[in-house]
Length: 355
Image (cartoon, rainbow, N blue to C red; front, top):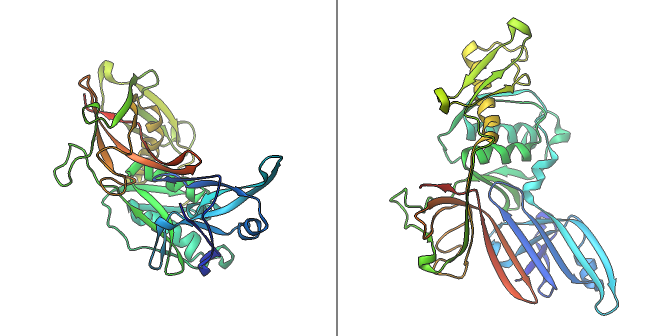
C-alpha cells in the first residue's frame, strides 16, 4: 500500500511506503477514518503533520483523489526495541461537514436529494454569513433520485443528519477532491441480489466456499409498527398525526414526541404540517423495528472480487444451507496492511431475511 501525503488542495508532497501498520476504514453511510503507525523518524514527523491529507495510491486518478483522510491526531512513543514510533489518526473528508450545523430554520417538501443539496448550499457553499463559507467546496451533478419527504431542520449537525437521512433512503455520500475542490456527491450502490435482473447476482454461500460463517437472529421484543406523533401546541390544541396500518393483535403502538417539529410561524397548510409530523414519526419508529439479522463472514479472496464484481454500497445475496436467503448492503470496507500481510474486509448492514 502506497500512501501519498497531500498539502490540502495543493497536491502530493510526499509518500509513505514503509510502515508498521495502516488501516483505512471506508464507509457508505458514515464517516471514514484511518490509523497509520510508522517509524518516528525526523522525515516522517516532518511529513505527517496535523491537517495534512492522506490518500492511497489505488484511490488516485487524473484530477481526482478518493477516500482522502485528514490527519487529526498524532502520538509519538518510544520503545526500547523499536525506537520512536509515530501513530497518526484522523477522519475522511466527509468530516468537513461535521463543522457545520443547519443554522436557519429550513423546511422543504419534495425531493430528498434536493433538500440535501439545499442544506449544503445554504450552510457550506453559499451561506448568508460569509464566515460560515467553506472555500473550494462544490457539488457533483444531481442524480435525480426519486425519493420524497417533508423535512424540517434547525440546529442539526449536517454530517450526522446526512448519515441518518442516507440510511433511511439507501444513499451513499462522499466528499472527495476533484479539480482541486472538495466535492460532495450522493450515489447508490447497485443491486446484485436475486431480486433484480439488471446485474449479475453476487452470491455468498457455503456452496461456493465464500461464506465462512453465519448466524441468524430474529427478535421482536421492542417492535412497534404504529405511532401517534404529538406536535406543537398544548392540551386539546396539540396537533397530532398517526402512522401505521396494522390492525388487531398485529398492531403494536407507541407515542412519539414530535414537539420539535414546528411551523415556526410560517404559513403552511394542515396537510403540510401533518406530513412533516408523519415523516418525523417514520424516522423515529425505525428505531423500534424487529431485529432480523443474518451475520456472517465472507471470504474476500473467493470467486467474487471486491471493486471488480461488487463495490461499496452494493446489495448482494446471502444463502446458507438451512433454507435461509437474505439480501444485504456493503456499508464498510476496511483496508489494512501490517507484518501479517494485506487484508480487505467488507462489512454488511443487518441482513434482510427473505425466508
